[in-house]
Length: 209
Image (cartoon, rainbow, N blue to C red; front, side):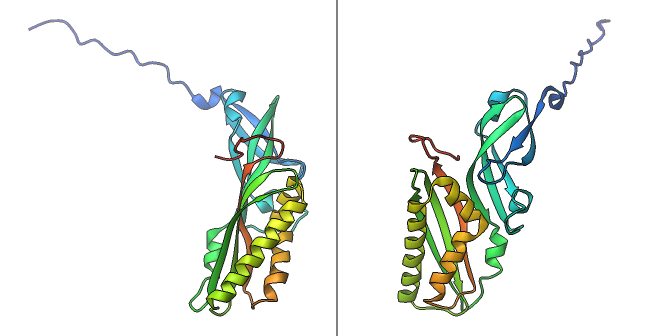
């Protein structure tokens, strides 16, 4: 038998990766609200570019109506020291909020469209209408066309920063509610989701992954 003892494997030093990272303050764009969204870690600033931060609207915009069921998304586009600057890249109303209004014998009318703002930003906007009673196909067609025309018209008349703010403030939803209410009774009207495809003054660059 060999008298050689089994060699012991030397354990490498455990590296705490969190200690190697720095924390960066994330700031919302000034056209939404110029306030901190919180902090995010990164081992180097270059890894922050393109990172998307999602926040509940209540934690972002206090001077507009509160809505804990709405999430707002921001993308980091610039790093200045330990501060990250962002752009608005979309929002979404919680699916649970929409589902709670969908019941038997009600109609759900959706409109998904691409729009272009006055300063050439491109967005995909999804709107929804829920009626208290089931309505016919022709009525649904009229409602959908009305929504699409209004959203397209507002986008064409407004620059990106105003259009973004008006979506999350509920201003555009209010305009839709007034118009659709003249066609058929409604339970809910919402611009339920948006995604920025191209920011203003960019050429072919997608704003969100």
